[in-house]
Length: 212
Image 1 (cartoon, rainbow, N blue to C red):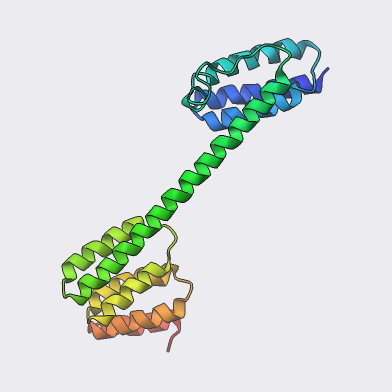
Image 2: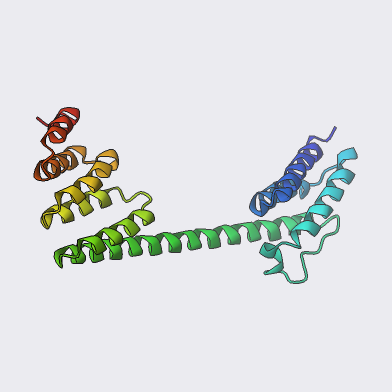
């Protein structure tokens, strides 16, 4: 039995399953894996089945936006051109991955820039005495949050600087959960609780964070 033919069939079966779940990238990966084997030449009863499955997958992938946008006439297929197909599909796969990475980087950069703008805007609003508007800006910043853990501490500090301890405590309670410098944030939270008049909560927080 030709184990290569069997493995190629398995990859193509996975490609079909991925395609049916509308996961074009994984379908492409599975087709590339199958072609990696088939370009070396396979024999036996699995060859016919693998050729048929590959033909079907190429036809289906040709209808996707990922391929039709790059190959308007589709990628032609006939048995015996597996080496060329492997090169084309592999290059296509790498190209799509690079585009996705660039898009992801751009989206992340835009999100971080928006978050910075909102934090700065919130600080300026606080300094201008527009507390409610500042809270709106900070809340919008929270909606942009992914892993910028220092953000909550920064908002808490900004609130403390303008004598808004209750508002500061709200953000510092979040900061205690995620900020790496838990001791520093804990001290700020205790201060915010004390300045807001919630002495029991301040003492409890000291005990929990072992700050006393």
